Structures are given as C-alpha cells and as structure tokens.
Image (cartoon, rainbow, N blue to C red; front, side, top):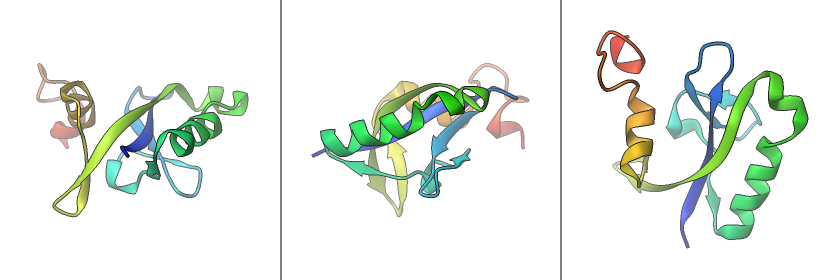
Amino acid sequence: MSLQVVTANRLDDGLVVFLTADGGWSENIDQARVADGKEAGNALLAEASVPELDIIIVGPYLIEVEQQDGGLVPTKYREILRTKGPSVRQDLGYQAG
C-alpha cells in the first residue's frame, strides 16, 4: 500500500501546506497526517475538502510519500519541488529563510 498525505496552498500567502493530525495545516511535511491505503487517503481528502476550509486553503489533493531518514519525502519530483519553494528564485519560498 502507498502512504499518502493531503497538500494544498494556503490562501493568505500561497505557501504549500499539509493537513496535520489535529486538522490544522503545516508548512512542514513531517507534521502531515499520513494515510495508508486508498480508503484512508480518500477519507483524509474528504476531511480536507469541506467547504469551511475554502477560506484557508485552496486545491487540496493527495500525494504519495515515503519514509526516509525519519521523515516524509514525496515520491514525485513535482511534489519535492513544491515542498522546497520556487526553483528559479532562491530569495523566495522556504529556501530564503
């Protein structure tokens, strides 16, 4: 089975965020709630897609992750880039801090 987390973009600043265990949103993928399998992933996505969240986040969707060196790492290159911030401007996004 594949491990999945929900990701979205936060509306107030556009940063990538991940659904956490307490139902909040974090910029840190290691704080994401992990679903194991298709049914658990669909339930997680349903929780992240309630209309009340439309004022906090936009575009929630599932991504596949794997455990590496004690942390979560996306399996797709696109998602790896999203967790690091813009790749063309090193003065923006997560890498600027």
